Image (cartoon, rainbow, N blue to C red; front, side, top):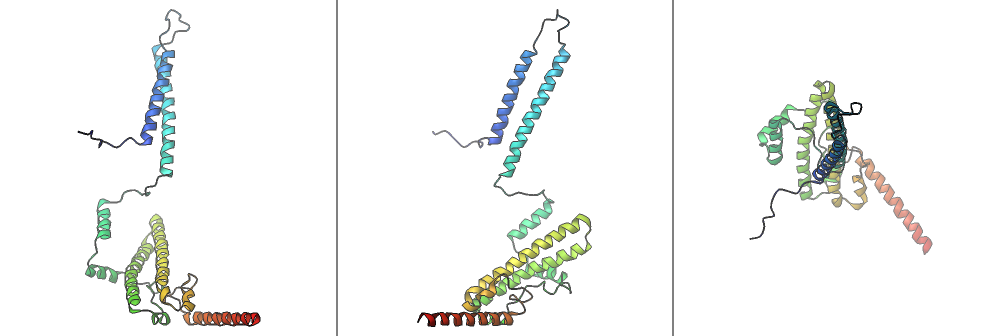
Length: 257
């Protein structure tokens, strides 16, 4: 019968290095202890008491421990710096962690979501903090499937936006470090919301008239309308640019003829 090769995993390189340093330390200790070995007690001027030898040996051991400790901690730092695993923060309360992971895996009933949504409303002075609708001029160009997809995006985004409302409410009441943490949460959430709006635009680009695809560029402002409030002005400018381009092209063509 073949040998069972399934055993404990091989030691890591850090364990191997630590073992090597421990062996090195023991060898040096043995050499020093040999040099501090028994001497002739008849020569009182040069005799070394056992207490002195113990003290010297202890000092050597401490120095070696410091050296090995510093060296291995250096390897620990390198391992942390070049680790490919995700960096994590301190563990949170076990019940909170369980709730979070359950909600990642499973959907909360709609009735409970609706109850939560009703508790956190948009602040009256944050008019742009909404899931933006697609401008009518663009909406009319879209197929029914694309419209259905974007409606689903808007619905999902509204949950995200309502979470921002809740964070803002907590930030208003918080103080000290907690206020700073919540403010950071808001910054990150709003950055994610902007990226989501830009991805919504990109998903609509294939169905837009090629002349107006530039409206999907990140430079186009986002308001409560996905393509901003001045889309009419933007379209006029695109039309003018296209007409100018055609005019310049026709002039170049006539010169060649």
